[in-house]
Image (cartoon, rainbow, N blue to C red; front, side, top):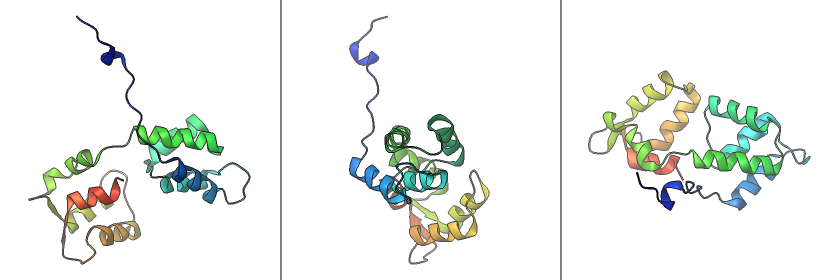
Length: 150
């Protein structure tokens, strides 16, 4: 058993745009008190490019509190960035539903309204406009991944 310095190295942290994080925090701190309420926290996370599931958001609130200051918010965004999947991983999630890199819009609508953390009809409709703006019935999963994962 050999050991190497690289085996002991900490994983690289994902890059977070500090201007985006700052702007997201201060825009959503509606009363300018230097802290976000729970609803503002979730909206600011999304504006900063983090899209935690309900379970992940609840865990963030438990760990960081539901009314974070800017420094706590920045740490939460970094934590989410470190756990974010790549575009390739995102595309792999849909591989079984695709043919030549394309997927039927109705299949995606079924998935997002019936499986996992379900979208409501309004949210699903907004997603359908994003993935299939011409309403052709199909979309390229690679384009979908690029629009969802910055």
